[in-house]
Image 1: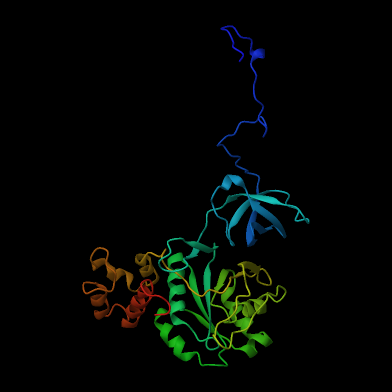
Image 2: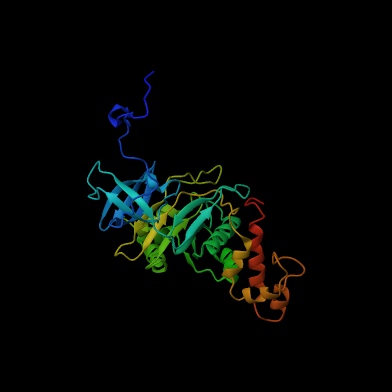
Length: 335
């Protein structure tokens, strides 16, 4: 073993070369102030399709983002090859602050949140009136998620040629949720798409619904040049088959807004929702909570909302609707 004395020459010291390069690692990451702005359209196996100006590019998440997730609807900063040419790959180096986040959990006992989309303005809850039968509990859960995320809800009822819409609409009338009723004939001739499109102007709207309700069929009618696969409802189980496997953002004709089609859902867990935030969607009831006891669930004997309604400040049906929605947080969809 070689030993060195007190007066060793630096040339005598051997330095083991760094096989990965001689640049030292650093926690300081480039800011990429000159990065281009992009909008995430869809994600497939770690590759993200991003709209940059008037072209689409394929990108991957940069290492410096760490565990920060990127979802459809995100506005991002992109560097690298932005030509959009075949076999080119760019990098997403920054995710801009989100204006809204629509989340769900697999079920009410699952603490792991799944971000559905980011930066949406409106949630269109698509429900068939028959084939398959409507699931009001799922609608309630989607409404709670919309109110929690700060999205405006829109109820889209399909297949009105098979069953009347009035009974279901009566249930949601006290909530004041806007709605559009469509049938299969109107979808074929474009009348349904025209009526729905009026509700989507200048907004980013995410479409949610369980399989078989005609969600993707409606999206195809809204954006006919981008057809997505559709399926049929199983005659035995009454359930639809998943044909949309990933969320996809599509521009409406004339740059009049965006629609985001999502895979069909069979459940919409609300573990992430703070029930105290749901009251913000009821501006006529919210002032009445000032007299509530601390941590009031708004469904207990001492709740001040009962007296608020009794004094004529709000419609009793509104209080009933609030409590029904809050109860969905404690109740499973099949109950």
